Length: 126
Image (tube, rainbow, N blue to C red; front, side, top):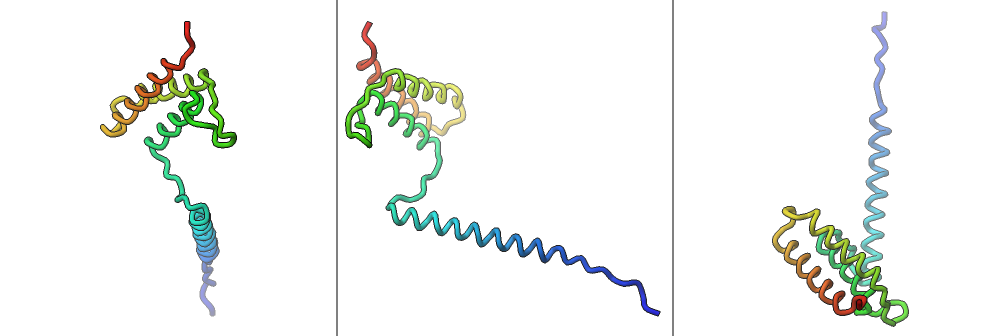
């Protein structure tokens, strides 16, 4: 007389196979990103607070005509858009108060001061 038939759960093999495939896809994707970075000469961008405030400041400078448009090489003067970007940096300053490193806080204050002074010089005259 034979004992009860044993059932073996082998679903874990399928899960391992799927995980291995996902890992290979991620490695291929990472290699592709590194290859593109090498081709362009630029490393992949790293998100940071400093990058964020620098990008907003550069856009504000662009719209104040301080930086030429990269496509036309001509200055753009759209003071409304420049003011909006400066105001956004001001909102960031208010909302992040007490949560920044001393270097981040100093950088934001300096950027805001410089942009505001340039805007006042260029801004609409009464």
